[in-house]
Structure formats: structure tokens, C-alpha cells
Amino acid sequence: MSKIRIIGRNIGFLVLNRLTVAVVTFFLFPFIVGHVGKELYGVYLLVMTITGYLGILDIGVMSALTKYVAEFNGKKDYEKLNKIINASFSFYVLIGVVIALLLFICSAHFSNFFKIEDSNIKIVKQLFFAAGMSAFLVWPLSTFRGAIQGLNLWNIDASVNIIVQIFNAIATFIILSSGYGIVHLFIATQILTISGSIVLFYIVKKKVNLKIIFPYQDIETFKFIFNFSFFMFLGSLINIFLFQVHNLIIGYFISVSAVSIYAVAFNIQNYLRTINSTIGAPAWTIASEMEGRRDHEGQKTLLFKGTKYMSALFLPVILIMFFYAEHFINYWMGKGFSESIVPAKIIILFWLFNGTMELATGMLSAKGIVRAPLFIQLSVAILNIAIGISLIKYLGITAVALGLTVSMVFVGFPLYLKMSLRSLKITFKEYFDKAVKSNLLFYLFVVLLSLVMPKLLYPKNIYFTLVEMAAIYITSILFYYLVLLDKYDRYELKKII
Image (cartoon, rainbow, N blue to C red; front, side, top):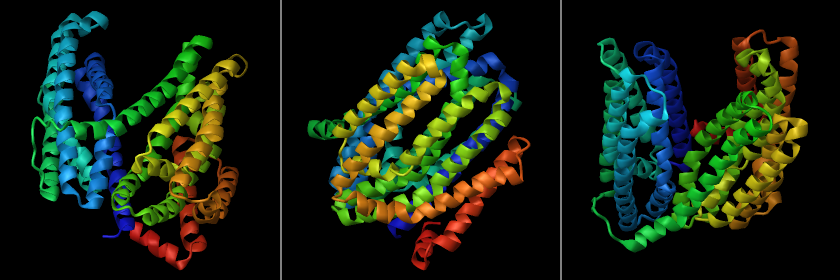
């Protein structure tokens, strides 16, 4: 199967996977709350949140695992590939033990920090104990999810997760309808997650003739992994800090209620980030595989074609959301959140730039370039915070949005792009001509359509707004495919689809 077909297949399955998760969550949420009550469901969410935060102990090993499995698979060097998987597995066994112990501690002391009804304290302890027990298996088995992605089998990962989600929905209905509680539900979801990971283990084992060695003690392999993962970890920390510190700044300088107003703009940004990562993730592992084969010409072609087609899919979403932000926010959140509109539009603007360089920044990681990008991230974070703090008294939450966009557009974007193009020995003119230029007329078409449609058919509610936005997107994509693309481009897109 060609690389274009693989990317298209993987993106399709990733989209289907995330849609399944969204639909299942949408319907299960009121059902679970209705059966277990607000407090116990809140505790359940806190357990999941704390478990998620403990995932920071991963220190970027999952990124390294995925990258090097892809790279050594590209080289057909299955000996080193086995070493990477075994080292990661042993590391995650240790992490699983540490997280389990921390969750056991939470089980004993959680009620000391949070107000819990006396009747629910026993259930809280049981939830944390169950989470701790599952950590012993969940973390080591997560190794094989990273390996599957590194082998560019995102479709299998997505398929297994979709099946797990469907069984999770069925199990939730049966367990709660039968009178069992949140602890039984949690145990069932963890068993399903573990079962899915075991399936992935057997697939990886078959694909690369994997032989698990535990405990794995090759110090050089661990050094090799950590030389990459540590910088990815630091980059993740900066990103977490960068986006979370905004709430602290707003809460300190303005008010706590202003944090909620800013959250609307931030959530829209999060939706765009999810779409962008869904489109870009499969191409990153393909680029890593090409790095293993030293196929630098293939990486160039992937950058040009991938940026052109993926931007054509993503940038219309950004442009449409920009012009419909006022209608969307007013109908979604109500008139009381009108202050969110300008910050949302400002944040959306930076995605016009960020959305065109997902593959470019991914190419840096695929080539193992992780130290220099860390300093760019740090520079962006410092400028971001400096702008926000210096202007917040004058502009309110708009200052924070400006800090994010200005720092990304004028520092992050040009430096990341320059570094990526230099790594592939590509000039900016060549990149612009082959990846961006031919789409400019398409973007203009989307802008015009987004300006005209609300005047012809004024959105009356959130549903009308969403349908109108979807109609513009579909119309634009059809125009792009039927009018702007030549015969060979249409042939390539057919392969992707």
C-alpha cells in the first residue's frame, strides 16, 4: 500500500475513533450521572483526572517509543526495534508501580482534602484502590499502543478502541441498570481497556516477532530513548504551563468569572487543536519511517503534498469558525459570553499559521531534532506571558489572547518553519510554491462564502449555525476538488480517501 493511502486510511480511522468517543461520551454522561449522582460521578472524574496528571511521569517515553519503532521499522532493523519496545515496557512497569502506590495513598487521604459525604468515603477509597490495581497492567500494556502507532497501524489502534468504546457503552448500561455502582463500572472499563491493549500486544508480537525480555537492562537503549524523550517531556511541560497559566493570570488580575469567559475561547482553540492533531499524527510516523530509510526526498514530497492537502482540509474550518465565531458563541453560550468573541477570533487567527506547519514541526521530531525547538517553545512562552501581563489591565482577557497569537505568529511560526525547511534543505520559496501558493484562491473562496452566507441566511440558533458552517465547508471542499485541482491532484486525493 502506498504511503498516501496509508495516511488517508489512518486519518479516516482516527476521525471515526474520535467521533465514536464523542458520541459514546455524549450519551453516557447523563445516563451515568442519573444513576450514580453528581457527587460520585464528580469523584469518578477526579480519579480519572488525577490518574491523567500522574501520566506526566511518562517523561515523553511514549513519543520516543512511537518515533523509534517507526524509524527502525523503516530500516527493517527489528533487533533495535525489539530493544526499544522492551526498554519501554520495563520502564512502564516501573511507572505503573509508582502510579499504583500514589493512587493507594490517594485512597487513604483523598477525603482529607475534598469534601465527601460520609456515606461515599468507602466508595471513594474503593475507586482509588481499583485505579491503583489497574495501573499495574494499564501502564506496561500501553507500550503496545505506542508500538502499533509506530508501525503505522493507526487503523488497528482506532478499530480496537472503537470496539472497546462500544463494549464500554453496553457494559455501562447493563451494570447501572442492574443496580450495581460506580466502582463496578470503573472496574469494567479498566478490564475493557486492558483487554484492548492485550489485543494490540499480540498484533505487535506477530508483526515484528517480538520477544519480551523483563527486566530489560540495556543501559545504552535507555539512554538512547531518554535523549529524545526528555526534551519532548520538557516541551509538553511548557505547553501545559503556557495554556494553564492564562487562567491564573486572568483570575489574579481580573476575576475568577473572567476565567470562565476566557474558557469559551480556549475551548474553541482546543477543538481546533484536536482536529489538527488528528490530521497530522499519522503523517508524523510515516516521516519517522522515512528517516529510518534515509528517504529525505520522500520526506520533502510528504511535506509539500501533506501540507497542501492537510491545510486544504483544516484551514477552511479555521476561516469559517473565524467568521461565525459571534453567532456560534452567542447561540452556544448565550449573550452573557459576548466578551469571549474577540479573544476567540484572535486565538483562531494563530491557527491560520499553526495549521499550515503541523507537518513541518512533525518533521523535526521525525528527524530527532528536539533540543532547538525546546528553546523556541520557551521563547514563545515568555513573550506570551509578558504580553498578557503587561496589557491585561488595559485590554482585559483580550490581552491574554493577543499574547498567545502574537508570540506564536511572530516567533514560533517563523522559527519552527525555518528550522524544518533547513533540516530538509528546502528554501522558503520552494515550500511556498509547492505547498501553499496553489491553495490561496481556495482560501479566498472560503472567506467570500463565509461573508456572504450569513447575510443571505442569517443563523437563528446553534443548530442552524452548525448546519450552515458545515454547508460552507462541504461546498468549499467540492469547489476545491472539482475546480481548483488538476487531474493528478484529484487522483492523489482519491487514493487518500
